[in-house]
Image 1 (cartoon, rainbow over the protein chains, first blue to last red):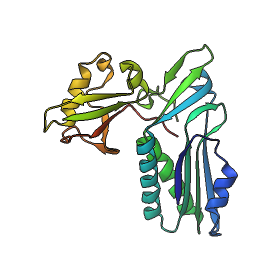
Image 2: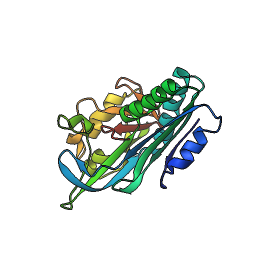
Image 3: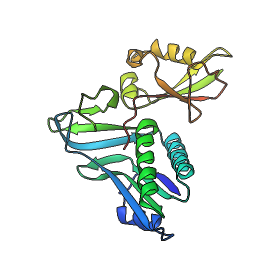
Image 4: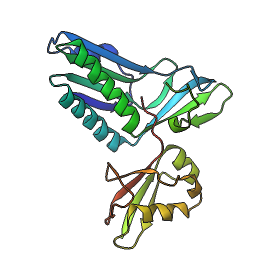
Length: 145
Length: 80
């Protein structure tokens, strides 16, 4: 298990290699990337900010919980902060397991808990030059999913 | 006693501050610190019951604070 908040680019192949170290039989990779349209507005870029010390601690706790729920899973998670361009990877989750079911389930657990608990915020930069912190609790129906 | 309140994202923008020292009575709770923050310029941005963390762990409003505690007021998170 390894988790980190990083300010550099996330390398999906490196995450997969790390989660594959034990030749488990199944590896699931999830990538979150910067979307070009959110809530009907054209997005040109994104800035991620974190409460660093707590985010590190919370991300490790989430991965530990997933490892307890789905034993023998190898879980590698990185979340990026700073300015990201469209399509760049903001979060990468690689899970190795003997079987695909628990691998998918552990991956899903990590992303859902991370979205609920990780003290990270994102500010979207729009084509018209304005920018705004994203508030998922205010997202319009059908947006943000 | 003195605690440090941390503000992030939209809250930091509204206050124009990322952190502020608060002098509170001994025995003060998270809710007392939040009330103090609401009196400051920009304090109107805080919802009735914002998420908070004390010393890096999510905490409830009735938690009693201690000298030197770090109270983070957490806007709606948007990671992933």
